[in-house]
Length: 380
Image (cartoon, rainbow, N blue to C red; front, top):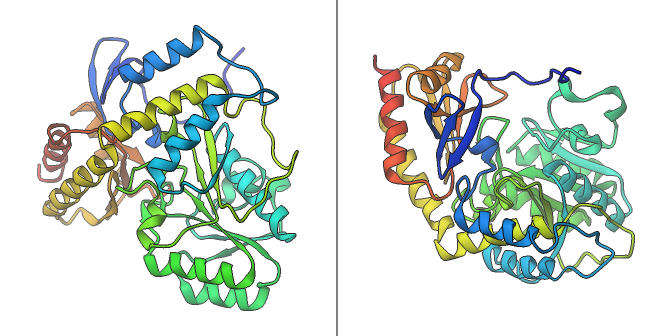
C-alpha cells in the first residue's frame, strides 16, 4: 500500500525534538521556528507535558463523554484563568476544522438562520462548512459548495455594513481569524472587529472568533481578537492548546444555552487530551508565556524592520505570529534557511510570505539566530 500523496514534503525526517530544537535521522540539529503550523506552544517534549501524559496513560487513556471526566472541568477552570473568559462554557472536539464546524452549527441552532459571512484570505479548515467558509476554491469540492456562505473583503467595514443592510435577518454568524495565518499573517484591524461585534449584536447574529492558529497566547494576548477590546460569542481553538496532542475547543458565551444532543464527539475532551491541555495551561500560567510571546514578538518585529531591503515588501504581525512578505517568490530564501542555516520557517498561501511561528517560550538567543540567518540571506 502507498500513501495518498497530497503533501509537498521537505526532504527531512525528524526523529527527536526538545524545546525548539529538532534532530533528523542523521543526527543533524535544526532550530524550529514554525512549530508545525503554530502547534508547539510550550516546546517539544516539555517535561511537565510528557509527565502529565505518561501519568494519565498509566491510569486511563480514554473513556467516552457518557461518564463524568473531572479533568474537563479542571481544564475549563484553567482556560478561564488564561483567557479571562471565566463565565464562558467549554466544548471540546478534536481539531480546528471541527471546532469551526461546531461553532457555525451552534450559531445556526441559536439563531435559527443559515447564512454565514466569511472573508477574503480566510482559512477555517478542510471539512464541510469550514472549507466552504475558506477562501480557496482549490480545496472546496463540489459537495462543499453552498450559497449559505457569503464572502466579503477582509478589513472592509463598509462592505460588511452593506451585507448586513441587505441580509441582516438571514445572517447566523460572522466568522473571522484575528490574524489570518494561511492568508499571509494579515491582522484584522480593531475597527473591523468592533464593527463585527456591533453589527452582529444589532442584527441578532453571532460573532465567531477563529483562534485556531492566532489564539492560545500566540499574539501576546490569549485571543488575538481581544486586542480590539470586544468579546466574541464563540472562540474556536486547537493547535497550541495541547502542544501537539489532537484537541479542539470552543469557548461559548453564557448567552448561548446548551441542549442535550446539540453537539457531540467521541474523542473530544478525552482523558489524555485533557491531561495534555492542562499541562500546557499550567506551563503558560507558571512561566508567563503569553507575556514572553509579546516581549519576544516585539523584539523580533523591531529587529526585522531594521533589515529593510529591496527584497522585502512588508513585515507584519503581532506577538509570535509574524509574516515577512517579499517582493517575489521567497521559496529560495525559505529553502536556504533550512539547508544552509538549519532553521525551519513556514510559508503561506501567498508564495511571497514567510511565516514565523516559534514556541511561546522562545528565547532571545534563538530569535537572534534567525535574525542573523535572515540578514545573511538578504545582504549576501
